[in-house]
Amino acid sequence: MYTKEFVPCIYLYRKNCVKSLQDVTVISEDPVKLAQSYCDVGADELIVFDMSETDAEHDTALDIMKAICAKAEVDVIGAGNVKRMEDIKKILYTGCKKAVLNYTKQSNVEITEEVSLKFGKEKILLSFQDAEVLAVNKETIEKYVSGMILMNPHEIHKTVDVSELPFYVHVSQIALDKMMDLFKYENVCGITGNAMNDNVKEISSLKEVCEQNGVPVRSLKAAYTWEQFKKDDNGLVPVIVQDYKTNEVLMLAYMNEEAYKTTLRTGKMCYYSRSRKEQWLKGDTSGHYQYVKNLAADCDMDTILAKVSQVGAACHTGKYSCFFNEIAKKEYEESHNPLKVFEDVFAVIQDRKVNPKEGSYTNYLFDKGVDKILKKLGEEATEIVIAAKNPNPNEIKYEISDFLYHCMVLMAEKNVSWEDITTELANR
Image (cartoon, rainbow, N blue to C red; front, side, top):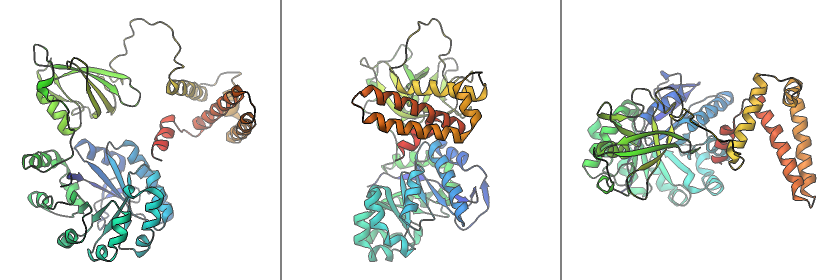
């Protein structure tokens, strides 16, 4: 039996989120914020449907999809407006983990093999209304597609007879008890659609019901039980919390058994407040949730190290990290940390843009404008090519450094950050 997932949908139409594929009533003017709210209540994945009608609207929808992928704490599936292989590429390059072929369109059926071989079977889903299309294209589907979205739940009985592939059921309206009945079908891997959106705040309780009935749901699987930890005299274990991207230490807190189990169940950090003597789901009042990326125990099993994706600030003072009161410092070089070097140099360049300094070469470039910056980039790129032919390896180091500096000037000019670049690279 497949792990069962609760998958809300975002229907993008003219920059807004609308009610459904058939109802363009606006429910949110901020698609990214809506996506984050779905993550906050325990969504396992998101499906984003692009309902645009023009090329300009389509480009805007892709930009929004990219912004959603950058902020969502779960995998995003992109669907809609696929006419050719290039459209699948555009969806995947937004950061979506999978893209959907609409099998009500013969043109989408025809490009299945091509996009699957190009991007990988695991990245391709199909959506369909009529189970007959599965029987007609059975060999192609099983060879080139990793899963499906059934858009017409009335076809579910026919679907399970035709294919063993996992599929999501897109449902418009359904009672909660009937929603759970859909999970009785072994290859139903998730429920999505407007019915899921309407009941999104019930995801946590629905998962509890599933677990009580032996239905597998998405949750963190712990290698150690609470009993295996060494607790202090109050039955607590300290937790050191780090940013999973930068390894910056964010805070120190404590867990009791309930907090430990809640963290595993929800995927968000939960603690025990020693001062208030109560459970504390980080972010419940501030919105500054901590999404679990990794939990590890130390050698003595008396401390937990949590790597998290931090929303907003970790500290109640508004600081990103609680550790900002510097006690003493010895000067040292941080050149061993490449990411820190890039960030520091870029920070200086950004500061020059805001606070010009007389005689600054960086300000000279900003003053001359983007054409001058691009001219210098072209020159430095050529210098790299020439240096690469030189037997002295130091030459190419110098030229690449010059190129990256001018590239960062261009980034600052165009308001592009290193995080934007690394996110783009990670999505490829």
